[in-house]
Image (tube, rainbow, N blue to C red):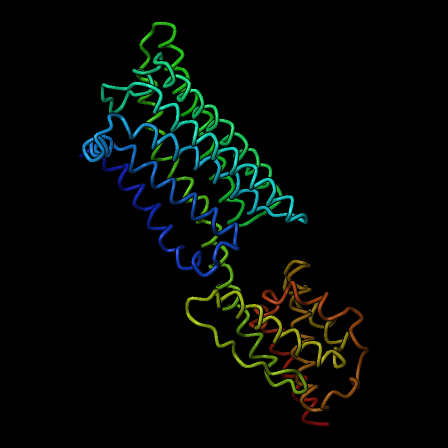
Length: 394
Protein backbone atom coordinates (compact mmCIF):
# COMPACT_ATOMS: atom_id res chain seq x y z
CA UNK A 1 0.00 0.00 0.00
CA UNK A 2 2.95 2.35 0.58
CA UNK A 3 3.65 2.42 -3.17
CA UNK A 4 0.01 3.34 -3.81
CA UNK A 5 -0.18 6.24 -1.38
CA UNK A 6 1.16 8.97 -3.67
CA UNK A 7 -1.12 7.81 -6.49
CA UNK A 8 -4.24 7.73 -4.33
CA UNK A 9 -3.41 11.00 -2.59
CA UNK A 10 -2.74 12.92 -5.81
CA UNK A 11 -5.69 11.33 -7.59
CA UNK A 12 -8.00 12.05 -4.66
CA UNK A 13 -7.01 15.72 -4.64
CA UNK A 14 -7.76 16.03 -8.35
CA UNK A 15 -11.14 14.35 -7.92
CA UNK A 16 -11.92 16.61 -4.97
CA UNK A 17 -11.16 19.68 -7.07
CA UNK A 18 -13.44 18.29 -9.78
CA UNK A 19 -16.18 17.67 -7.22
CA UNK A 20 -16.00 21.28 -6.06
CA UNK A 21 -16.56 22.40 -9.66
CA UNK A 22 -19.42 19.95 -10.24
CA UNK A 23 -22.29 22.21 -9.04
CA UNK A 24 -21.22 24.97 -11.45
CA UNK A 25 -20.92 22.41 -14.26
CA UNK A 26 -24.44 21.13 -13.63
CA UNK A 27 -25.84 24.66 -13.64
CA UNK A 28 -24.06 25.40 -16.93
CA UNK A 29 -25.77 22.36 -18.52
CA UNK A 30 -22.94 21.79 -20.95
CA UNK A 31 -22.95 25.34 -22.35
CA UNK A 32 -19.64 26.33 -20.73
CA UNK A 33 -16.88 24.62 -22.72
CA UNK A 34 -14.13 26.03 -20.54
CA UNK A 35 -15.68 24.73 -17.32
CA UNK A 36 -16.41 21.39 -18.97
CA UNK A 37 -12.79 20.99 -20.10
CA UNK A 38 -11.50 21.94 -16.64
CA UNK A 39 -13.72 19.32 -14.99
CA UNK A 40 -12.77 16.73 -17.62
CA UNK A 41 -9.08 17.40 -17.06
CA UNK A 42 -9.39 17.04 -13.29
CA UNK A 43 -11.62 13.95 -13.56
CA UNK A 44 -9.50 11.96 -16.00
CA UNK A 45 -6.28 13.09 -14.31
CA UNK A 46 -7.55 11.72 -11.01
CA UNK A 47 -8.74 8.58 -12.77
CA UNK A 48 -5.32 7.99 -14.31
CA UNK A 49 -3.56 8.22 -10.96
CA UNK A 50 -6.01 6.03 -9.06
CA UNK A 51 -6.18 3.38 -11.80
CA UNK A 52 -2.40 3.31 -12.26
CA UNK A 53 -1.78 2.42 -8.60
CA UNK A 54 -0.56 -1.20 -8.26
CA UNK A 55 -3.40 -2.12 -5.91
CA UNK A 56 -5.93 -0.82 -8.43
CA UNK A 57 -4.47 -3.04 -11.14
CA UNK A 58 -5.02 -6.10 -8.94
CA UNK A 59 -8.46 -4.90 -7.84
CA UNK A 60 -9.72 -4.47 -11.41
CA UNK A 61 -8.59 -7.98 -12.33
CA UNK A 62 -10.33 -9.47 -9.30
CA UNK A 63 -13.58 -7.59 -9.90
CA UNK A 64 -13.83 -8.08 -13.66
CA UNK A 65 -11.85 -11.28 -14.15
CA UNK A 66 -9.98 -9.62 -17.05
CA UNK A 67 -6.23 -9.79 -16.66
CA UNK A 68 -4.40 -6.48 -17.15
CA UNK A 69 -7.64 -4.55 -17.73
CA UNK A 70 -6.06 -1.62 -15.92
CA UNK A 71 -3.65 -1.12 -18.84
CA UNK A 72 -6.20 -0.11 -21.50
CA UNK A 73 -8.19 1.81 -18.88
CA UNK A 74 -5.12 3.88 -17.99
CA UNK A 75 -4.22 4.35 -21.66
CA UNK A 76 -7.75 5.52 -22.50
CA UNK A 77 -7.77 7.91 -19.55
CA UNK A 78 -4.37 9.27 -20.56
CA UNK A 79 -5.66 9.79 -24.09
CA UNK A 80 -8.76 11.56 -22.71
CA UNK A 81 -6.47 13.67 -20.52
CA UNK A 82 -4.55 14.65 -23.65
CA UNK A 83 -7.73 15.72 -25.43
CA UNK A 84 -8.99 17.64 -22.39
CA UNK A 85 -5.65 19.46 -22.18
CA UNK A 86 -5.88 20.76 -25.73
CA UNK A 87 -9.57 21.69 -25.42
CA UNK A 88 -8.88 23.47 -22.11
CA UNK A 89 -6.10 25.63 -23.54
CA UNK A 90 -8.10 26.42 -26.68
CA UNK A 91 -11.10 27.66 -24.70
CA UNK A 92 -9.02 29.21 -21.95
CA UNK A 93 -7.24 31.40 -24.46
CA UNK A 94 -10.39 32.08 -26.44
CA UNK A 95 -10.32 34.39 -29.43
CA UNK A 96 -12.52 36.49 -31.67
CA UNK A 97 -13.76 33.48 -33.64
CA UNK A 98 -15.64 31.39 -31.09
CA UNK A 99 -16.99 29.08 -33.79
CA UNK A 100 -13.44 28.28 -34.95
CA UNK A 101 -12.37 27.49 -31.39
CA UNK A 102 -15.30 25.13 -30.91
CA UNK A 103 -14.66 23.51 -34.27
CA UNK A 104 -11.05 22.78 -33.29
CA UNK A 105 -12.29 21.42 -29.97
CA UNK A 106 -14.76 19.09 -31.66
CA UNK A 107 -12.05 17.84 -34.04
CA UNK A 108 -9.79 17.15 -31.06
CA UNK A 109 -12.52 15.33 -29.15
CA UNK A 110 -13.54 13.20 -32.14
CA UNK A 111 -9.92 12.36 -33.03
CA UNK A 112 -8.97 11.30 -29.53
CA UNK A 113 -12.32 9.55 -29.09
CA UNK A 114 -11.44 7.38 -32.08
CA UNK A 115 -8.01 6.69 -30.57
CA UNK A 116 -9.66 5.61 -27.30
CA UNK A 117 -11.91 3.24 -29.23
CA UNK A 118 -8.93 1.81 -31.11
CA UNK A 119 -7.08 1.19 -27.85
CA UNK A 120 -10.05 -0.82 -26.54
CA UNK A 121 -10.32 -2.79 -29.80
CA UNK A 122 -6.59 -3.56 -29.94
CA UNK A 123 -6.60 -4.77 -26.33
CA UNK A 124 -9.57 -7.02 -27.07
CA UNK A 125 -7.76 -8.47 -30.11
CA UNK A 126 -4.51 -9.04 -28.22
CA UNK A 127 -3.62 -11.67 -25.64
CA UNK A 128 -2.28 -10.67 -22.20
CA UNK A 129 -2.61 -13.78 -19.98
CA UNK A 130 0.10 -12.83 -17.45
CA UNK A 131 -0.74 -10.00 -15.10
CA UNK A 132 1.92 -7.29 -15.06
CA UNK A 133 1.41 -4.64 -12.41
CA UNK A 134 4.21 -2.21 -13.26
CA UNK A 135 5.92 -3.36 -16.48
CA UNK A 136 3.02 -4.09 -18.83
CA UNK A 137 4.49 -1.92 -21.61
CA UNK A 138 7.79 -3.74 -21.88
CA UNK A 139 6.49 -7.25 -21.09
CA UNK A 140 3.98 -7.13 -23.96
CA UNK A 141 6.01 -4.83 -26.23
CA UNK A 142 6.29 -7.54 -28.92
CA UNK A 143 2.79 -9.01 -28.58
CA UNK A 144 0.62 -8.52 -31.68
CA UNK A 145 -2.09 -5.84 -31.31
CA UNK A 146 -0.83 -4.95 -27.83
CA UNK A 147 2.32 -3.60 -29.44
CA UNK A 148 0.23 -1.37 -31.70
CA UNK A 149 -1.92 -0.30 -28.75
CA UNK A 150 1.12 0.86 -26.79
CA UNK A 151 2.57 2.77 -29.77
CA UNK A 152 -0.81 4.41 -30.43
CA UNK A 153 -1.35 5.72 -26.91
CA UNK A 154 2.25 6.93 -26.47
CA UNK A 155 2.16 8.78 -29.79
CA UNK A 156 -1.23 10.39 -29.12
CA UNK A 157 -0.19 11.42 -25.63
CA UNK A 158 3.13 12.88 -26.80
CA UNK A 159 1.53 14.90 -29.63
CA UNK A 160 -1.15 16.31 -27.33
CA UNK A 161 1.33 17.16 -24.57
CA UNK A 162 3.65 18.91 -27.02
CA UNK A 163 0.77 20.87 -28.54
CA UNK A 164 -0.73 21.93 -25.19
CA UNK A 165 2.70 22.75 -23.76
CA UNK A 166 3.63 25.01 -26.68
CA UNK A 167 0.25 26.77 -26.53
CA UNK A 168 0.62 27.40 -22.79
CA UNK A 169 4.18 28.68 -23.06
CA UNK A 170 3.43 31.02 -25.98
CA UNK A 171 0.31 32.39 -24.33
CA UNK A 172 2.14 32.97 -21.04
CA UNK A 173 4.19 35.73 -22.75
CA UNK A 174 1.01 37.71 -23.46
CA UNK A 175 -0.49 37.71 -19.95
CA UNK A 176 0.63 38.44 -16.41
CA UNK A 177 -0.28 37.71 -12.81
CA UNK A 178 -1.48 34.33 -11.66
CA UNK A 179 -2.59 33.40 -15.17
CA UNK A 180 1.01 33.56 -16.37
CA UNK A 181 2.15 31.49 -13.38
CA UNK A 182 -0.56 28.91 -14.01
CA UNK A 183 0.25 28.65 -17.71
CA UNK A 184 3.93 28.14 -17.03
CA UNK A 185 3.19 25.50 -14.41
CA UNK A 186 1.05 23.74 -17.02
CA UNK A 187 3.86 24.07 -19.56
CA UNK A 188 6.21 22.34 -17.11
CA UNK A 189 3.58 19.64 -16.56
CA UNK A 190 3.35 18.93 -20.29
CA UNK A 191 7.13 19.11 -20.62
CA UNK A 192 7.37 16.29 -18.06
CA UNK A 193 4.95 14.32 -20.24
CA UNK A 194 6.52 14.69 -23.69
CA UNK A 195 10.04 15.31 -22.41
CA UNK A 196 10.31 12.51 -19.84
CA UNK A 197 7.30 10.18 -19.58
CA UNK A 198 6.70 9.48 -23.27
CA UNK A 199 10.39 9.15 -24.26
CA UNK A 200 10.99 6.84 -21.29
CA UNK A 201 8.12 4.52 -22.22
CA UNK A 202 9.04 4.62 -25.91
CA UNK A 203 12.70 3.98 -25.13
CA UNK A 204 11.90 0.96 -22.95
CA UNK A 205 9.58 -0.49 -25.62
CA UNK A 206 12.07 0.04 -28.47
CA UNK A 207 14.81 -1.49 -26.34
CA UNK A 208 12.64 -4.58 -25.84
CA UNK A 209 12.14 -4.79 -29.61
CA UNK A 210 15.93 -4.77 -29.96
CA UNK A 211 16.31 -7.49 -27.32
CA UNK A 212 17.42 -5.29 -24.41
CA UNK A 213 15.91 -4.96 -20.94
CA UNK A 214 15.52 -1.29 -20.07
CA UNK A 215 12.74 -1.64 -17.54
CA UNK A 216 14.29 1.07 -15.40
CA UNK A 217 12.86 3.56 -17.90
CA UNK A 218 9.35 2.40 -16.97
CA UNK A 219 10.16 3.24 -13.34
CA UNK A 220 11.27 6.71 -14.49
CA UNK A 221 7.99 7.17 -16.39
CA UNK A 222 5.89 6.04 -13.42
CA UNK A 223 7.79 8.41 -11.16
CA UNK A 224 6.66 11.29 -13.41
CA UNK A 225 2.96 10.37 -13.28
CA UNK A 226 1.91 11.73 -9.89
CA UNK A 227 3.98 14.97 -9.82
CA UNK A 228 3.04 15.89 -13.39
CA UNK A 229 -0.66 15.35 -12.68
CA UNK A 230 -0.38 17.43 -9.51
CA UNK A 231 1.33 20.22 -11.48
CA UNK A 232 -1.46 20.03 -14.04
CA UNK A 233 -4.08 20.54 -11.34
CA UNK A 234 -2.10 23.39 -9.78
CA UNK A 235 -1.70 25.05 -13.16
CA UNK A 236 -5.46 24.95 -13.72
CA UNK A 237 -6.48 26.01 -10.22
CA UNK A 238 -3.94 28.81 -9.66
CA UNK A 239 -5.45 31.26 -12.19
CA UNK A 240 -8.94 30.58 -10.81
CA UNK A 241 -7.87 31.22 -7.23
CA UNK A 242 -5.63 34.09 -8.29
CA UNK A 243 -8.44 35.87 -10.11
CA UNK A 244 -10.71 35.60 -7.08
CA UNK A 245 -8.05 36.76 -4.66
CA UNK A 246 -7.13 39.70 -6.91
CA UNK A 247 -10.81 40.67 -7.12
CA UNK A 248 -11.16 40.47 -3.35
CA UNK A 249 -8.07 42.62 -2.76
CA UNK A 250 -9.16 45.20 -5.33
CA UNK A 251 -12.69 45.34 -3.87
CA UNK A 252 -11.24 45.95 -0.40
CA UNK A 253 -8.76 48.57 -1.66
CA UNK A 254 -11.53 50.54 -3.39
CA UNK A 255 -13.50 50.95 -0.14
CA UNK A 256 -11.86 54.28 0.92
CA UNK A 257 -12.56 55.85 -2.48
CA UNK A 258 -16.14 54.58 -2.43
CA UNK A 259 -16.64 56.26 0.96
CA UNK A 260 -15.02 59.47 -0.26
CA UNK A 261 -17.38 59.89 -3.24
CA UNK A 262 -20.50 58.61 -1.44
CA UNK A 263 -21.82 62.14 -0.63
CA UNK A 264 -21.94 63.12 -4.33
CA UNK A 265 -25.52 63.91 -5.30
CA UNK A 266 -27.10 63.34 -8.68
CA UNK A 267 -25.39 60.02 -9.39
CA UNK A 268 -27.23 56.68 -9.42
CA UNK A 269 -27.48 54.78 -6.16
CA UNK A 270 -27.71 51.15 -7.23
CA UNK A 271 -28.91 48.74 -4.59
CA UNK A 272 -26.54 45.90 -3.63
CA UNK A 273 -26.88 42.92 -5.91
CA UNK A 274 -29.09 40.21 -4.35
CA UNK A 275 -26.80 37.38 -5.36
CA UNK A 276 -26.96 33.85 -3.94
CA UNK A 277 -23.86 32.63 -2.18
CA UNK A 278 -23.06 30.09 -4.87
CA UNK A 279 -22.93 32.73 -7.61
CA UNK A 280 -19.63 34.42 -8.58
CA UNK A 281 -20.74 37.47 -6.56
CA UNK A 282 -17.31 38.93 -5.92
CA UNK A 283 -16.55 39.81 -9.54
CA UNK A 284 -20.02 41.36 -9.98
CA UNK A 285 -19.78 43.32 -6.74
CA UNK A 286 -16.34 44.58 -7.78
CA UNK A 287 -17.79 45.77 -11.08
CA UNK A 288 -20.65 47.44 -9.23
CA UNK A 289 -18.26 49.26 -6.88
CA UNK A 290 -16.12 50.46 -9.80
CA UNK A 291 -19.23 51.73 -11.58
CA UNK A 292 -20.46 53.37 -8.38
CA UNK A 293 -17.20 55.30 -8.01
CA UNK A 294 -16.88 56.20 -11.69
CA UNK A 295 -20.45 57.57 -11.83
CA UNK A 296 -19.76 59.90 -8.93
CA UNK A 297 -16.45 61.06 -10.35
CA UNK A 298 -18.21 61.97 -13.60
CA UNK A 299 -20.99 63.77 -11.69
CA UNK A 300 -18.56 66.11 -9.92
CA UNK A 301 -16.16 66.43 -12.85
CA UNK A 302 -17.26 70.01 -13.57
CA UNK A 303 -15.65 70.93 -10.23
CA UNK A 304 -12.21 69.55 -11.14
CA UNK A 305 -9.63 72.23 -10.51
CA UNK A 306 -6.33 72.04 -12.38
CA UNK A 307 -4.78 74.39 -9.81
CA UNK A 308 -5.53 71.89 -7.01
CA UNK A 309 -4.02 69.12 -9.11
CA UNK A 310 -0.84 71.06 -9.91
CA UNK A 311 -0.43 72.18 -6.31
CA UNK A 312 -0.76 68.61 -5.01
CA UNK A 313 1.69 67.30 -7.60
CA UNK A 314 4.29 69.90 -6.67
CA UNK A 315 3.87 69.11 -2.98
CA UNK A 316 4.25 65.40 -3.67
CA UNK A 317 7.37 65.87 -5.76
CA UNK A 318 8.82 68.00 -2.97
CA UNK A 319 8.54 64.91 -0.76
CA UNK A 320 10.78 63.03 -3.22
CA UNK A 321 8.15 60.61 -4.56
CA UNK A 322 8.25 59.32 -8.12
CA UNK A 323 6.51 61.09 -10.96
CA UNK A 324 3.92 58.33 -11.16
CA UNK A 325 3.15 58.50 -7.44
CA UNK A 326 2.90 62.28 -7.63
CA UNK A 327 0.37 62.01 -10.46
CA UNK A 328 -1.80 59.61 -8.46
CA UNK A 329 -1.68 61.88 -5.39
CA UNK A 330 -2.55 64.90 -7.54
CA UNK A 331 -5.54 63.10 -9.09
CA UNK A 332 -6.78 61.98 -5.68
CA UNK A 333 -6.45 65.51 -4.28
CA UNK A 334 -8.39 66.95 -7.20
CA UNK A 335 -11.18 64.39 -6.83
CA UNK A 336 -11.71 64.90 -3.09
CA UNK A 337 -11.63 68.69 -3.57
CA UNK A 338 -14.21 68.37 -6.36
CA UNK A 339 -16.44 66.29 -4.08
CA UNK A 340 -16.35 69.00 -1.41
CA UNK A 341 -17.11 71.73 -3.96
CA UNK A 342 -19.90 69.66 -5.45
CA UNK A 343 -21.57 69.34 -2.07
CA UNK A 344 -21.50 73.12 -1.63
CA UNK A 345 -22.21 74.31 -5.16
CA UNK A 346 -24.61 71.50 -6.18
CA UNK A 347 -22.96 70.86 -9.56
CA UNK A 348 -22.08 74.48 -10.40
CA UNK A 349 -18.96 75.27 -12.41
CA UNK A 350 -15.81 75.70 -10.31
CA UNK A 351 -14.97 79.21 -9.18
CA UNK A 352 -11.23 78.85 -9.45
CA UNK A 353 -9.21 77.11 -12.08
CA UNK A 354 -10.45 75.31 -15.19
CA UNK A 355 -12.12 71.96 -15.69
CA UNK A 356 -9.84 69.00 -16.03
CA UNK A 357 -9.20 68.40 -19.72
CA UNK A 358 -9.24 64.57 -19.76
CA UNK A 359 -12.33 62.39 -19.81
CA UNK A 360 -13.02 60.99 -16.35
CA UNK A 361 -13.52 57.38 -17.39
CA UNK A 362 -10.38 57.26 -19.53
CA UNK A 363 -8.26 59.00 -16.89
CA UNK A 364 -9.40 57.31 -13.71
CA UNK A 365 -11.04 53.94 -14.27
CA UNK A 366 -7.80 51.99 -14.62
CA UNK A 367 -6.21 53.77 -11.67
CA UNK A 368 -9.05 53.72 -9.14
CA UNK A 369 -7.19 51.43 -6.78
CA UNK A 370 -4.11 53.65 -6.75
CA UNK A 371 -6.25 56.73 -6.20
CA UNK A 372 -8.02 54.99 -3.33
CA UNK A 373 -4.69 54.18 -1.67
CA UNK A 374 -3.52 57.77 -2.19
CA UNK A 375 -6.38 59.08 -0.03
CA UNK A 376 -4.21 58.27 3.00
CA UNK A 377 -1.63 60.84 1.86
CA UNK A 378 -1.31 63.96 4.01
CA UNK A 379 -1.28 66.02 0.81
CA UNK A 380 -4.68 64.67 -0.22
CA UNK A 381 -6.11 65.23 3.26
CA UNK A 382 -4.85 68.83 3.21
CA UNK A 383 -6.46 69.39 -0.20
CA UNK A 384 -9.79 68.13 1.12
CA UNK A 385 -9.52 70.32 4.21
CA UNK A 386 -8.78 73.45 2.14
CA UNK A 387 -11.68 72.74 -0.21
CA UNK A 388 -13.99 72.23 2.76
CA UNK A 389 -12.92 75.58 4.29
CA UNK A 390 -13.39 77.38 0.98
CA UNK A 391 -16.86 75.89 0.63
CA UNK A 392 -17.71 76.94 4.19
CA UNK A 393 -16.70 80.56 3.49
CA UNK A 394 -18.78 80.69 0.30
